[in-house]
Structures are given as structure tokens and as C-alpha cells.
Image (spheres, helix red, strand yellow):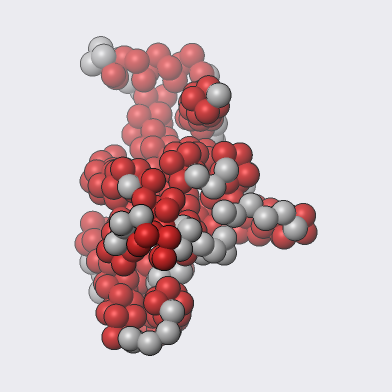
Amino acid sequence: MAVAGFALGVAALAALTLGALVIGPYPLSPGEALTLLVRRALALPTEGGAPETVLLSIRLPRVAAALLVGAALAAAGAAYQTLFRNPLVSPDILGVSAGAGLGAVLGIFLALPVAAIQLMGFAGGLAAVALVASVSAAVRSGDRTLVLVLSGVVIGALAGAATSLLKVLADPYDQLPAITFWLLGSLAGAKTSDVLPTLPVVALGLLPLFLLRWRINVLSMGDEDARALGIDAGRLRGAVIVCATLVTASVVAMAGIVGWVGLVVPHIARMLVGPGFGRLLPAAALLGAGYLLVVDTLARSIASVEVPLGILTAVVGAPFFLWLLARGRRTFG
């Protein structure tokens, strides 16, 4: 039954992907899009023209980026929530997004090329988590998990303050609009050259999470139970944090700060497949990819001016989360 459900989800995602490829200011028919994709995959000659340019050079990289970013953020959110045994945890909890935002904003402030801005965003996310880990390791008293989360909140706040300072100092006619738009999240400039380097980094982070899925399940029961079964809880927690951080930082560096995906989507996945991490991780990735694909399609289609992703994900995610709270249903653990 689980395999059939996953296959159905993959089929639905494929249909959403085709829909996203044909919807836009320059409409394409599904047959035309499929023909162009098959010809490109088989290296057959094409007629060229506007349809091919729109599909292969603009929409296909953007759709691929939406699938990758959505899957990565949702999977990282599922890992964090299971690790900390808290349904309110998201990929932002350890300061990853704030650190990546600071790095990218600094790159924009210094007028660096796009590739360098993305690299600085990636480095900023990793640096923030490394600083959080160092601070929590220096505190030898109290609950280690609580200290880690509180350190993440503090470091995230400091990174946010530094970002605000750079916005004040930035050129209001050139740099400030670029900084503001990036912080709201967007895939408008997504290119194949952005997606291809990010894909192996995301895979590198997700593969260990999947391979360690049963150990992560045990860890969610508590450190004492994990130690009783011969699992080094501290080392495993560190590995999960590193992997989830790597995934989050890589996609935030490419797409900007896209909130709510890593918080809301794991809840939906948990309602559908239960709390078992072996089922939760692929379900969250699948739902996250479809969710962000739909949101990004709306972002470029509902108005003449593109709506930033961060706004739409909040508009959709916040009411849904309030609905979950109103139902009072416990969907965790």
C-alpha cells in the first residue's frame, strides 16, 4: 500500500510538472511541451523558435529549481522536527536561513557576481550553524538540545540584525531592491547552471538521512533509549544537523529565503504516512516538491508582476498551520 501511494504521488508530481511547464504568459500545449522535451532528451533536431526557448531555457530550469528547493526544505524540516521531537521546528531554527541571508546580502552589498553571491550565501548558512554548535558545546550545563536551539535563535537574531544594517547602508536605488527581493525568495533567475551544482549537494545531504532512518527513529524516542540500543546519540544528532544544514544552505543560497515549506509540509506528510522517519522523509520531499512547484507557478502567473515566493508560502502556510492548531490534532510522534 505504501509503494502504491508513493507511486501515485510521483504520478501526481509528474502531472503538476507538466502543468507548470505549459502555464505562463507564453502558453504552450502539453503535446508541444512533451515533443520538445523528448526531442531534447534524444538529441533530435528541433525547429527552434520561441516555444523551444521559453520551455527549455526559461521554464524547465525554473521548474527543476522549484522541485529541488521544495523537496530539500521539506526533507530538512522533517529531519529537524524528528530530531528535536518538536513539530514547531523548521530549517530556520539553527540560524541556517539567517546566516545564508547575511552571506548573500553581503555579496550583493559588495557588488559581487551572482555565482559569488550564491557561494557566500551557502558559506553563511554553514558558518551560522558552526557558530551555533560551538556556542552550545561551550555551555556544559543544562539540556543540550535546548541550549542548541536557544543558540540558534540568538545567532539567527544577530545575523538578522547584521542584515538589517547592510540594508540601511545599501544603495537605495540599486542594491536595496535587490537585497529585499532576494530575502523574500524567488526562482525568477533560476538557470541550469544554478540547479546542476546544487543537485549533488542536496543529494549528499539527503542520502545519509535516508540511510540512517531507523537510527533517527530511535533517537526521536530520547537519548536514554538510543543509548540503551547502542546508538551514540550525540554523534548521530550532529550528523543529522550537518546533513540537514547542508541541504538547507545549498537551496537557500540559490532561491533566497523561502519560509513555511520546512514547517508545514512535514506536518502534512506526517498526517498521511505517520511519524516513521523511513516513510516520512520521502513523503515530505515529494509533497514539498509539489507544493513549491504549485506556489512558484502561481507566483509567475497570478499577476503581471511576479510575486515573491516568501509572500505566497506565508499566505498559504500560515492559515493552514492555524487550521492545524484549531483542530487540536497531535500529528507528531
